[in-house]
Image (cartoon, rainbow over all chains, first blue to last red; front, side, top):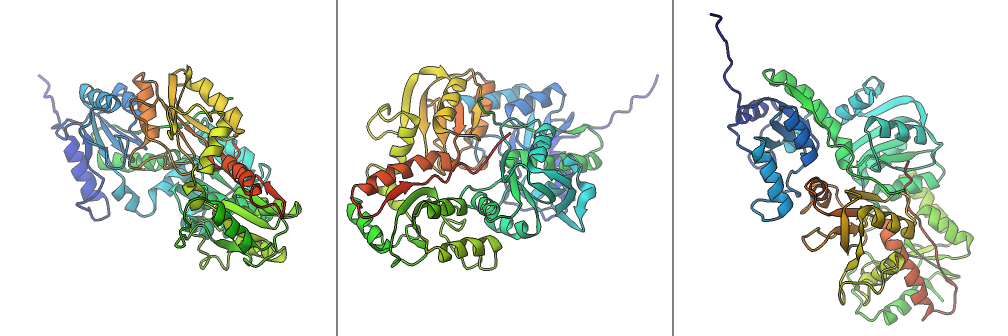
Amino acid sequence: MPLLVQSPPLTAQQVVDRIQKNAGVPWQPQSLDTFKAGDPSTSVTGIATTGMATIDVLTRASKAKTNLVIALEPTFFGRLDAEATTDPVYTAKQEFIRKNGLVVWRFTDHWRARKPDPFATGLAAVLGWTKYQVADDVFRYDVPPITLTALAADLAKRFKARAGIRVIGDPQTRVRRVALLPGLSTLAAAMKSMPECDLLLAGETREWESVEYVHDTVASGQKKGMIMLGRVMSEDPGMNACAGWLKTLVPEVPVQWMPAGDAYWRPA
Amino acid sequence: MTANDVVDRIKKNLGVPWNDKTVRDTFKAGSPETEVKGIATTFMATLDMIQRAHAAGLNMVVTHEPTFWNDQDKVQDLANDNTYKFKTDFCARNNIVVWRFHDHIHARRPDLIWVGLARALGWTDRASGPNQRSFTLPPTTLGTLAAAVKKQMGSRALRVVGDPNAKVSTVAVGMGYGMPRVSPDIDVVMGGENPETGGPFDDTEYVLDAAVFGKNKGQIILGHAISEEPGMEDCANWMRSFITEVPIQFVRAGEPYWSL
């Protein structure tokens, strides 16, 4: 009779313990990186990383027999992942997670603290730009010159975007040096990058800050621009980088990136 | 008539006390003693907007939002920036004065920015109740509503969340950097701009998930400019009622984005 060698089950808590030990940054006791739903003692069948654990992502994870979801952003509609509410959408999401035996753990504060910045390297990798990196700066890339309109179309295709991409600048402006500003970025970040770059590839910026600054820069005659991908869409590739890292750390189960996609559409 | 005279006239006609501690509603460029040839009201004193105001012979800009890319128009860190130099040089060379009118136009009753948004939407007399910023519309779908709003507001880059076929009727509306919170009584929330996630309450994720569960919810994000620009046209009309010495025009800053 053949001897069945079965490895002991790996729990969600054990995966998190392994992440904490290997994060490469000191683990802060007060952080947003905690379990948001499900039982930490659940045996993990697979791991999905994502920008946001929407019901759509959780459904895809469940269908792929992947029961640990590692999410960058909140799951329950706000920074603090609200507890105990009678809201029908909140309770339906909780019920969906329970019924499907899912576990959701948030990984934001510590993943963001890693060097080099995984959101910059992750975005560059998804775009195929890693080879264009300028020296040792993971935020800058010299891409083959391309017009703003062609680049915006290419980004829309790669991200399967609908209405989430917005552009400032002349559509025919050719850009070469690109600064990556994934996530929410400040005026200071835009002002630091703009003089040496043709394009800011940003996530979310304020309309009275970087948006007006780039608009004025273009109006002053400089051939530049900014493409805004949206906060989640610009940072989701950082969770692809996270999946790559987890594959080496948790070889026992499959790990895959499940991007949340573009939340937005626009009527004709 | 000097720029200072214009501001004094606004203060006298505002109908609410002036807050002398305001950091927003102050002069941002040019001297208050400048003689005013004409006034341009606008959502935002962008370089492009200032250039068009100048071409129209208007040398005082009354702007709702900042001139130098931050809420308090702090400029000490900007001195070496080429865009800053270009913008300030243009203003100085052409004798342009920029003054911001934000906190007090919102404090006025009624708030002219709100009046303008409701007017632009075509919903002036349709509020759910007195002083309410929600509307009960004839039942429609989110897709039909969003298409009507996009056309009505002349937006290119507006964004919508939710199922286009969702049946909706109640709409809560915010302005600028303001997005109402979706609730059991409200089907659709609409505003200017908002943090996409990680705020006290994330409408976008809520509406995405609500749609999967078949709840009739939607979010329409107009853009900050699109939501607040109409009110500065109302501001120009209002100012003409007490300033007759110089021409007053509404000069659009326009939607800053384009989209595929």
